[in-house]
Amino acid sequence: MLTASDIESQKRLAALAAVDLVENGDLVGLGTGSTARYFVEELGARLAAGRVTGVRCVATSLATERLAGVTGLPLVALPASGVDLAVDGMDEVDDGLRAIKGLGGALTREKIVAAAARRFVLIGDAGKRVDQLGERTPLPVEVLGFGRERTARLLEDLGLEPTLRVQSGKEFLTDNGNPVLDCRVRLPADLEELADRIDRLPGVVDHGLFLHHADLAFLASFGGMEELRRPE
Ligand code: A5P
Image 1: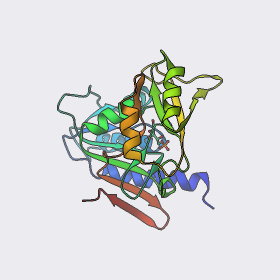
Image 2 (image 1 turned 90 degrees about the vertical axis):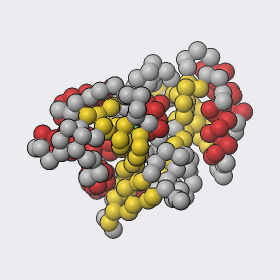
Image 3 (image 1 turned 180 degrees about the vertical axis):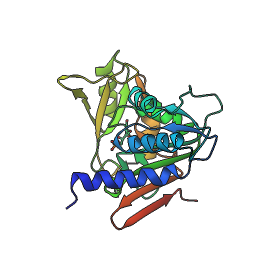
Image 4 (image 1 turned 60 degrees about the vertical axis):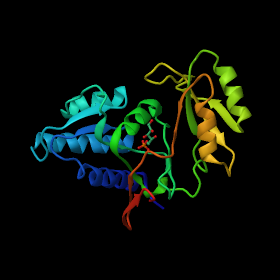
């Protein structure tokens, strides 16, 4: 049985593997969450030590923006030309490199940056690997506050079971000021079709299915580092 500290070590190992991919002068998308945090800290430390030079970063959340500031990573707005590399954690990943993200609530900005990356790399402990996406975690959907009960009904009509995310007794709001509906997915599900149908609902800002974004995933376990690559 892995302890919490075992899992933290694995997250850190996966993050370090991804930092090795950063090249001098890269524009790097910084993910959000406890695994991405290790990546940001290590990249900041290598920049400070001169082990990598000239990197600039785009943060996917206000929390990551603050962390990057503390670690001394220079931040810029996402340029139209995108980023060289983006690195982020995930909540679940399957063998086809498809992921669910967003339990940290940053899914919309994370997807904008992931979609703008020449290379998008997922990092996590091996416990994040699943046979079927949705088997352990709900699918987060960021929605507009306006009409959110109606949007929840439309999600139910797709076979999902939405629950409004609450944090510290209050409605959770993303950095964009929107609520999140965490949707239990009834399995088995056709995720391609589901993503497409959610994308078309009025009131939805974005959802946590990242089906075609990742090029590579580092999954750390005590057995070693596993690398998942996008199927040809
Ligand atoms: C943030 O919105 C999420 O997408 C995170 O990337 C994801 O929840 C993984 O977070 P941890 O690294 O904290 O598990």
